[in-house]
Image (cartoon, rainbow, N blue to C red; front, side, top):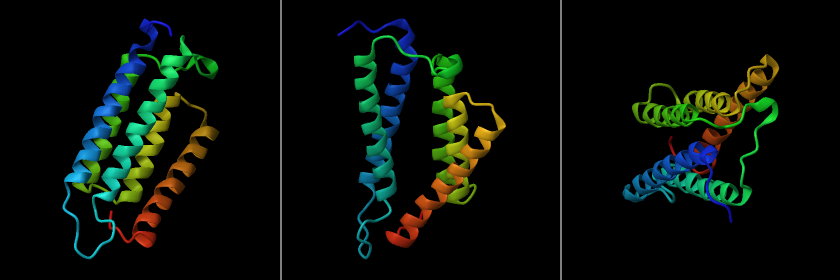
Length: 156
């Protein structure tokens, strides 16, 4: 094993914030009372998001520990810097808040979140890639909504 390097500080901060957010989401989902007539209940979505966030944070932590020096992404746009970490956490917090406030429907809010999060993390600026990211984000958000509402019968 190697000592943690200064360049890894933003990644470690992001892992900590992601773990806290995942734990909070998991905890809030588990705190919701089980409904009488629904098999899964409304707490399923925050539980799933929280568990996924914790698993992804754990996998990223293992990769940070094993990797040593972080490798920059193509074009030198790596995920480094406290500013990007703070912006990522702010985007996630705003997404969670907008779901609570029901500012927009779930699919629209989630599509915007996925797209903005992609741009923040990747640093991508090419119009073709941004258009593809917008289409994938929209498709993913609609698919998640359809799975929860039509297949699992959970109103989100």
